[in-house]
Each structure stands twice: as C-alpha cells, then as structure tokens.
Amino acid sequence: MSRFQATTNIFTGKTVLASYIIEQVCEVPEFGVGWFYCKFGNSDKSTLLAVLRGVIAQLVKANAQLYPHVLEAKNTTGDLKLISHKVGKDLLAECLQVLEKSCIIIDGLDECDKDVRREIISLFARLAKERNDAVPGSLRVLFVSTDEADIRKSLSKAVCINLKVSDNFSEMQDYARTWGKRIQDLHTLTDQKTEEIVREVMKRADGEQLSYISLWSSLK
Image 1 (cartoon, rainbow, N blue to C red):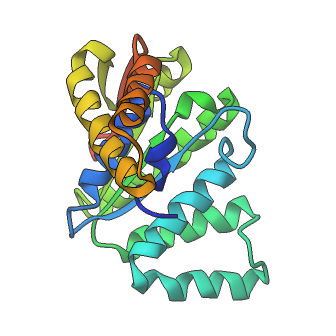
Image 2: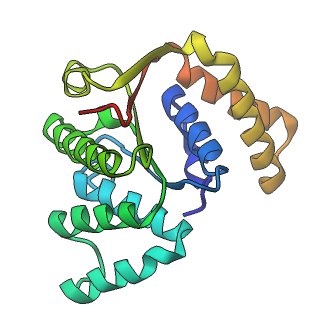
C-alpha cells in the first residue's frame, strides 16, 4: 500500500490528523515507522492480529534489513500469511530490536472491541517499556482515538492530549485541500468537484471529539 493511499478516503477529523502525523514522521530518516488504521466492523481492520500484520508490513516495506527476519519467521512456521498472535508479537519485537529508532502510530483504537483494545494497549505498552528501558528513546507509540473511559484508564500513565475539531480545523482544511488538489490532478476533476470533496471531508469531520493518547518512554 502506498504511504499516502489510506488518506484519500478519510472522512473523520482524527484520522485526517493521524495521516498528517504519519506523513510527517515518515520524512524523519532516523525513524522506522509503522502504522495502522483500525475500522469498526471490519475483521481485517479491528483485531490485534490485523494490527500486527499492518505494522510489521509497514516497517518491513521501508526497512530492507528486516526482510531476513520475516523470511525466517515464514520458514519456521510454514505460513505465507501471519496467522499466529505469538509469532506476530515475537516478530514485531524482533523488528523493533533491529531498528535503532521506531515510531508506531495506531489510529481508531476506539473502533476495536474493548477486549481487543486492552490487548493492543497491553502489547505496545510492554514493547515501549522493554525497548526504552534497554535503549532510551528508541520507541515511540501514538494512539489516536476518541475519548473512551477504558482507554483513558489503560493509558493513565501515558501522555494524553485532548483536542476538539475547533483546535485544528484550519490545519485539517489545509490538509484536505492539499489532497484534494492531488486527487484533482490524478483524476482530472473540475475545481467545483474538488471543492465539493473538500467540503464533504470537513463536514464529516465537524464536531468530532478527538483524543490523542501517546505512549512514551516514561510509561511504566
């Protein structure tokens, strides 16, 4: 999947901003970046295994030195597709050890079931602690989610920034227009049609409560 492909069909404020963050972090050469967009009701987008597959795939795609580790895991299990939670967790931990610095961004944590949220948070909290205890500053994890009580409780020791659409409306509008121009050039759309797309994106983003919750090296 193209680095920016997921942003062309985004209609929620938090995901637009998550995509912008991903885009910016990918420009920092010292970071290996993995990300995932969770989606409610889609079994391929709302499970721990789906998150593991997505994050590992992004890390490997951008970091060729990880290929041997993935091939070894495939040869060991005999599976062409990652189907084991244990193998996925072990492989992700191994990839993060190989990379000097890593950043993982997961959007839409609230779109997963509560038990899945708990699994995802538990895994990445453990990985963040292990990596940063070993090498301070080597792993950053950002969750982007609406403000849910169980998520807030699970991440009580993490840095949390709450935002409303009014806090970043102009940034979202600029971002939507930038992508609107790219879509216009790609599909030869009229200015009127492009502006309709931008307005629809902003309309669907309007009024949504956002919560940016990040796990940093201070997490214990």
